[in-house]
Amino acid sequence: MKRRFDDDFEEPATTFVRMKPGARERALLQSHTIHTPSKPTKKTSYESSSDVQRWLHTQTYTEQATKPTFQPSLLTSRRDAPWILSSLTPFYDQQLITDVLHEAHSGKEATVFCCAAHPSTGVEYLAAKIYRPRMFRSLRNDAIYRYSRIQRDEQGQAEHGNSRRGSAATRKTEKGRAAQVASWIEYEYQTQRLLYDHGANVPRPFAQIGNSVLMAYVGGLGEPAPRLSDVIIEQQEVEPLFERLMNNIKLALVHGRIHGDLSEYNILYWEGEITVIDFAQAVDPYHNSDVFSLLTRDIERVCQYFEQYGTHYDARDIARQMWVEQMGPLPEEI
Figure 1 (cartoon, rainbow, N blue to C red):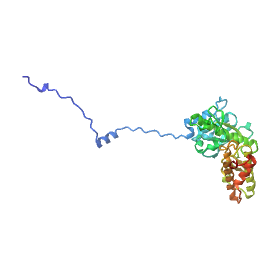
Figure 2: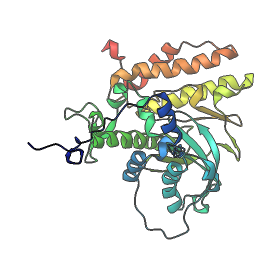
Figure 3: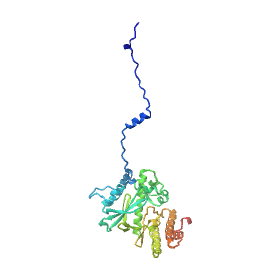
Figure 4: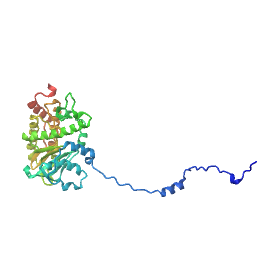
């Protein structure tokens, strides 16, 4: 019989059970944990995002640099400096502007800057209107505008807004969206040039590249012309200014345009003269007779503004007479 000695005894394999640490142990572990401070997130503007810059690049042109880089000192402290610089550099390259002097007007759709004009332009200052891509989000019900103008398809060919093929601008594609952006800006520039050539009180347009329109500057250096909504005109100016605005509305209608968004907020006043601006929503009445309502609304807003000076006009009657003289019977009478 073999005896079992202690030296021959084999200990069972040791196993360890990981116990859940208690509150004291957890506090001890946390005290030894090294925390690496996170870097603060640098804020960037919407316009400087890579997607927006990519869109802008497709709208502008490529030109070899033949002179010093355009570096306006005004933009050094602005968050949207990359967007503004990308928008205005083509005008600098084409010897239209030499510097950006100050911001003239700013709205939800665009910002206007006063620029030093190149001597070749023959003027001292120019206004550069830079559109933001976000402006097209605010046009929620833009069907009546799209159906009343020429737009561009994905190949850059002109097509009507209610074409059977379906405008590229109405398609939910990247190319369709780019076509919509280009069409709206190009249409405003062409409308402004058309009206200026026929004697309307609008800023003289100089150029349009990508998302920017370059035009005559109204006002003085550091003192842009105020909107009509921000001034009190003399009583003797009331009747002449009202008649001038009606003549501008009629002149536009004669040449196939209705402003579509006219009010005291997009009429500038400077040294007794008025200047009509912002034609992004202008429409062509020859392509869509439904825009008579837009003509009436434009006239109503102007009449409402002048009522504070004791005037009383029948806006619908003025619109009706103007339409019948230039376009024939009213849509509801056809």
